[in-house]
Length: 333
Image (cartoon, rainbow, N blue to C red; front, side, top):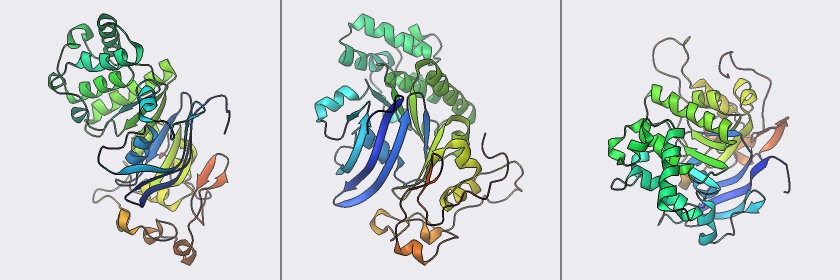
């Protein structure tokens, strides 16, 4: 597992369990410096749990734990590290921004203090130096009058500005990897576009690698270099964004793309994937997508398909993986 010169993170055979039940398994991901990886799938597919595992940041009292696997960051496996060692990794090497900034910003603590806290912890900076850095970070993420707004409380910021403040806090100690969990879901379309542009600008300026968790394939098309599609706790397909969106190998990826609205589509109900994702307590045998898959055969329920190579840099977990039927033009950008 050594050394690709630009490899930042390598995940192999990651499995996550709770109370003896496996929720997520067989997750393999690779991320290079400066790359944006889109992690997509329906709600409940395991995207957020996977990202929390990468930071070893499971919700307290949840019982969630890493069952097995390797999470290698800069050639160091994070899985065996104790909590004290992980506190040095979080913030300094990996930053995370969450779906709802209001629930992750302290309402009684000034924005600048929340950004400066990480700087003081990791870099032993003086209060004055940390505040100066906080002002500069607010400027970098596009907060107007950063010297004045550094003393504001979260409730004095709009939703978009709170999200920008959280990004500033996540970047305070110059991590090389930023995990963004549905960072634009609660924002209107205009602010959503601004936040996505900001993330790409930070990637370009800082060489930041980003894992972008989303269920919005339009966001993926605009921002990501690579794509990983999850369903029911497993990866269904991975590969370069353009190839996956133009010519998906897995029926689930094709079904997700078929649910995206388009300008040419007649008014009415949006298409949907028949059925419901399975509950954790009742994952189906074989391929977990087979009960909803239009191409399922007896083999699909009898045998689990591995995530196998189907084309250059493309992997799919399907017995009948296909790359031969291109989608309509205009899906990928």
